[in-house]
Image 1 (cartoon, rainbow, N blue to C red):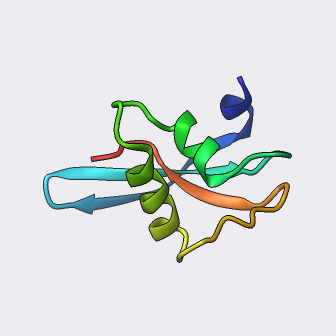
Image 2: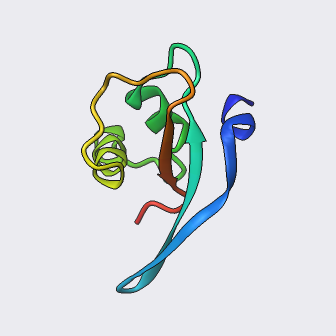
Length: 79
């Protein structure tokens, strides 16, 4: 599984009102887009657009021009 190989241990934990948001570091692989990464992260059948929005927000407005090996933060829970 591509995602499992690219994920590194939990990096950050933020308490946000009623739940804890934890992050992992993800390294972009060849051919990946924010959309394809968001699809891999869709644990609760959320709207993919919401997940893309959260990834952008969590990574200072990252755009769609991803580079191979680029490091981004991904939430381990989406609430």
